[in-house]
Length: 295
Ligand SMILES: [Zn+2]
Image 1 (tube, rainbow, N blue to C red):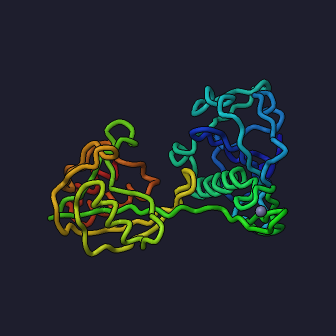
Image 2 (image 1 turned 30 degrees about the vertical axis):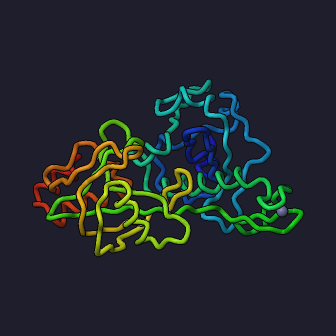
Image 3 (image 1 turned 120 degrees about the vertical axis):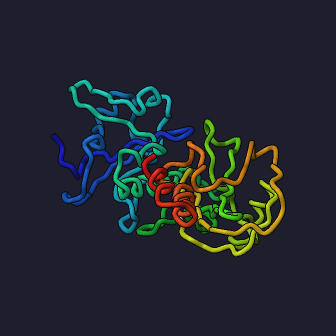
């Protein structure tokens, strides 16, 4: 048996690739769910997964200790989210990053998301954007420098806003083309160049649903590295207009009372869910909130 320090934390398939994260140091007191004791190097090799030479060794001051790299998802796709037994009979489970919050501790999800974000940056910043020469890691800093012109690169973070709009005790929820099934959520979108976060929130709601908003108030934020977003959440009040949909983005949208929240809403881990729960808590009855929290 390897010690806990040498075990892999998790493997996270995403849309187009897989990140393998190896945790080298961890507190023995840190909770570790049995299904997160993931395969050793030789077991990965059995699956055709070999750590590439370009694996990112996270620097000492990084929030992540360990090693991250991407491998072709075709090797792992058939194994995702189902228990797998190695040749030696050991069981492990590959968890998709979107489903990780169902089975992982929040701290483990945070580490995994940080690792994904950094490994994604590592892979997408191999060459200088100015002169196309190779980039090199700057020691003890999460940054790279161009070997020819000296330009620097830091992990890219893409700010996005998400906003809960209330009109006479009802919440604006929309079903968009990018949502699965009949999922309804509050409106969200990326911040554009030159905008404040509040301007971005007002523009998104206006563009996607034709609604003007006022009293835009910041609530909280959440890293959302799918692949590089940082979500800033706001509440706002209806200021005018009637729902008119942006056809290429939104399928349907409506105002929902606290007791009428649609059955399919974002996962508990997401800040979208927290905005919906907060609305029901502020505008609904204790029964409405209990009903939502039991889902
Ligand atoms: Zn350069």
